[in-house]
Length: 335
Image (cartoon, rainbow, N blue to C red; front, side, top):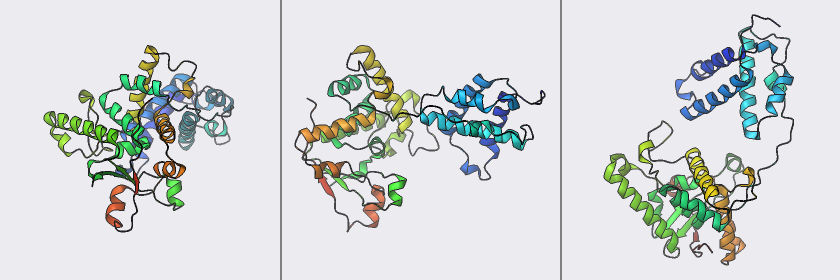
């Protein structure tokens, strides 16, 4: 061990600067703002733990013990990637001996991560969270309840998807399914048969008109669900509109509303943090209520299906070959 070796904090800062500014030949491919912020937060936690320890004094054992303190597989993967990169950066600068293994890469998580066991959201829990949620989140929750769409599809819903008395949606599909060339799903929610969905869309239209009175940018926003916490609205490079909602913002908003609901009610008693219902729990609740209302397996399969093209691509590239599955027979009411 070289006593003159720089400490972990110094090298972590240097690696972060290199990763953010110098590692990409094309400036357009550099990390987005949210990615930079998340990585910086993780590096700060690592600096708090390893601090002034010389880089070559940190062993695989030390890193493995740190990994064991992490609470999720996702966080472990992110932290492991950062630590591996810091030690690799130190090696390329001649500050970490070649004969030593990379501790970030060599160490593994001791425990076997348990799969997330989130529960379906109960009607009482839905109402409690809904009561604490901002208006845009209430609209989103109601849309999921009536359509059983995944949250990424809710944030992508646009006003031009409403036509011919229907809401036309092609749910987004994962990259794996896209590679497998699975059959696309085309959903048409018939608004004359689903009065609750129509009422939700009318409420969203009212929110849009209200925002347009104060913000010129709101007039060009194409999304049905628009954020309404005006003081915090700002534009970012990865948004099509400053009023657009992404999954991170939505997850934080739902968690805040759920935490307030937990303080004010006993509907969540007995649930661990991993079991607390999230957005997917609303989708489960929706499908369960549809089945209770009489929906058959074919209907449920259609409404829960995946796809691999966005609505605009499908509508304009092959409009004459698309067979839309009409969905509007089950107007969901909470018991």
